Each structure stands twice: as C-alpha cells, then as structure tokens.
Amino acid sequence: MTLYDQWLAVLLAVIVGTVLVAVALIATRLIGPYARERAKSVSYECGMLPVGRNWAQVHVRYYLIAILFLLFDVETVFIVPWAITFTEMPEFVLYYMVAFIVILSLGLVYAWKRGVLEWR
Image (cartoon, rainbow, N blue to C red; front, side, top):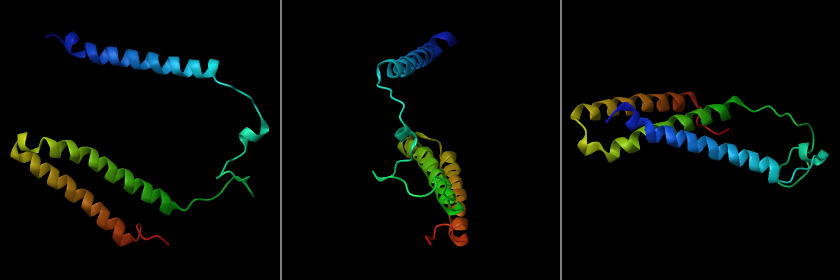
C-alpha cells in the first residue's frame, strides 16, 4: 500500500464533510425564514422579558470549575480507550497511565485544598 491509498479515505471524508456543512449552511440561509425584528436582539431568559442591564459580572470560581470539568473530561477521553485495550498493551503503558492519573489527582487535591470546589 502506498501513502496515497492509506490517506485516500481521510481525504474523501474531509471533502464530503466540508461539502455537507457548506450545503447545510447555504440551505439554511436560502430556505429558512428570516425576519429582522427588534425583539430578536433582546436577551432571552426562561420566557421572561429581561429586567435591568444586559451585562453581569461572573465570579472567577465558575471559570475554575469549568476548567476542572474540562480537565477531567479530557482525562476520561484518554482513560477509556486505554482501559479497553489494556490487556493488549505492554506493561510500561500501565506505568504511564498511573503517572498521568497521579498528576491529575494532585491537581484535584490542590484545587480542593484551595477551596475551588466549595460552593459559596
């Protein structure tokens, strides 16, 4: 097999995916209803009209919790495939994953000690 044979499926998938997204975006613009109203630009919250200003300050704690969620979500993305193919891997891969989990656990312990996970 040549390099072109191996990457032909990837190239076709990229081309087909790009064409499908472009067709969907163009069709939405052409076929979908579009009416510019003043009410469209108003912030919408639970079916009630907004009261007060549009801008509100968000505490940094919410961002920290979101970052921690993403961190452990990414950890799951790495651990699940590893766990599925664990028996077929060489022994050193186990040590790499243990080191990975320990490093992330230290990050969780650090965040816990700093009080990031406490909801006030």
